[in-house]
Amino acid sequence: MHRQNVKNEFENIITNAVDLLKSVAENVEHMRETNLSNDDCLEFAYNAASLRWEICDESEFKSGDLSDNVYATLQTTVPAMLEARRKEDKGNDLWRVFNRTQEALIRGGVPVQGLNNENCCAVCNHVTPVKRKARPINALHSQVKINRELWDMADEACA
Image (tube, rainbow, N blue to C red; front, side):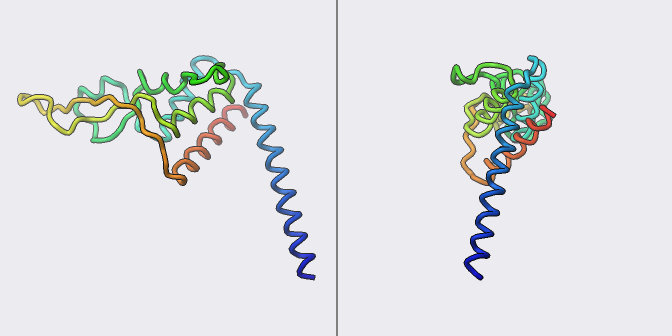
């Protein structure tokens, strides 16, 4: 009796996994068939960047109102997330846009800005922006969280 229960449970696990893979494959195919305009690509990249960073306009760094944090900028980070690192990633279908933004979020390498903790001069209280490249995300739970949120964004975009 026990062996039969284990066998049935194993068969259920396999069946559910196969159904899930079919569903994922269908979603990927639908994403490949969904072409985005340039504005839609920028909006997707903007929303993707907001999963990891606060987003600001580069002019906000002059105001001195930003906290000591890492920021994605509309002018540099968001467009850089859409750049294809491989020829296979070129194109504006949702699947390719998803992959490019996912790689930028997880592997980093895109330009971001932070703030220098020291004042820019003795006269004013402004801190200076520091441009750098985003670091990769190495923590598995953070990768899973961002991947899940990004997948949900892409799934919603092709609905």
